[in-house]
Length: 270
Image (cartoon, rainbow, N blue to C red; front, side, top):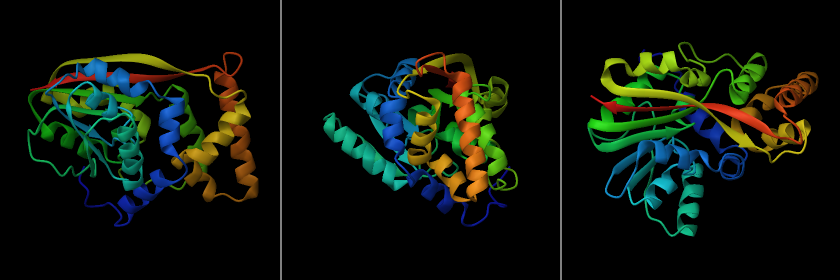
């Protein structure tokens, strides 16, 4: 897969999508511990040169910098990086925040000791292109760490629920939750890595008292959900309202407690 068939405005649309709503609040209040889990899995320590791909507002970048690493947080959406800078300043930690496309990273070959992404690179539409870039910028022996929502877990199911309401993806694009399928990730990284481990884990989400509260929060704050609703008429919006609330009810274990499954992958660059 190459980028030759990509519509010229695709990157601009992706950039704008993640600027919708308030993804920094989603990262900070809904899944605050996910980045730290990735940092620990990668064994990040002082002196490591770390690249966080599709870093968003720094859910993993800031914990990596707090561990003493030399961190570059790269993301397509400048608004998310601005939120990350503010968070880093509040935590009194220094790192680099740089605009970059996960499918065309602006870094030289073999530049980093750790290349990671926390529910970020999974949203690059062309998986093989993005995977090749992750591998290209990792030095020999570098650690690679990825967290992605699984297709069977809550967020994977949420994207499946929204798919019939959304515009068709560009030709060749693959669904984001495929990065949460171990076989798919092994195929993407193939012989370019060794010591690959893939573990399914869950993150506990308990900030929504009701299914409707979850749905309304994601309608207001989560860019992909906002974008889908913007293309709907009143009747289809009402149908999606019910479908998302029903999904949240299916995952509710009582009193609004949900467990969202993700795949944690670690490997070493050959």
